[in-house]
Length: 464
Image (cartoon, rainbow, N blue to C red):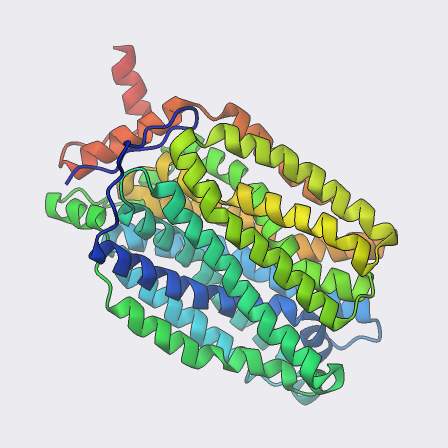
């Protein structure tokens, strides 16, 4: 089997007539996507219920303190994600993508279901937040293993010239999974009212995770491993120590981390923090908040496949740079407009953030699969993706809430979000075609049973 052509950032390399997806490829794609949808419903519903969880688990006379404490636990789970990546990434590179996808889904669904059963602070005191922290850490550990594995799985099943399009669906599915969580949570708030939600209604979206997880697990059990991983197995060229080997690709890891930073911060701005921001800070009613979160998230998800198709044909880097600059402007508009926002005036900047987020986020997944060779791809993505998501993504709601509480300025979070855009722009500016060529060369050698080489060895051979 020939390797999938690698897309460079500056010029298209896709064939003129890409192969249409085979039935086996479609089955794998659908199976992975359904599991990913449930995984992100499980992980994201917490953010939409942060205000109720804060009051249930963190006793305080100050509502802001309870909310920040709840978001701190939300952020903590992200700092466990790199540990999950360090465990599951090498597992996927050694034992296979399918097995790892089943394990992480089982952990996530089980942990989410457990949150719905936890006792509150009024019932067991300090034990309640301790248990919440523990279960959220299990969720973070699972999520850390999901992204590298499922991205590698989808990319390795993608047809020639379709990697940007195929992996863009992972981001769209993650958004839709959070939208599903948001719709369930906000609909319950709207139907039951805040008092009923605080008195136990918040448990319902977590308990739903149990049966959803079992359905997704059954679907993933029916999948075959990716063709490229099966080829590595047949040649005996799977990495024996992927975690040690991946750190020989330091430049690729740094580039992925930088490019992911803006995606991470905007993802949790739009999908998690915006709901609390509009309801608590801007004073919008729950119906308006539900509608706006749905509109913004859905728009972002809808444009992602179009961005992926565009970069498959015309290249990654120029598109990402343009979108990063546009996203910076949209973020500034969003927070400046908040100063005197009404539901009528705030919809435009929200849509601008949603569209630029969706278009930018369509492509980094493809970039990271092309910067890292097949035999260490899951490990490389797990390492380079999870760290910026922990620092700039999961902590975004907590940092934003703390900035507002500390400064009294509801526009103050703009400094944080624009900072993440600058990091990604710098990463894109230093991205070079040779970064992709090195990965393609190493993948080719592994997939054809030849000796694998590192970027350092390649440079040494070139100089000789």
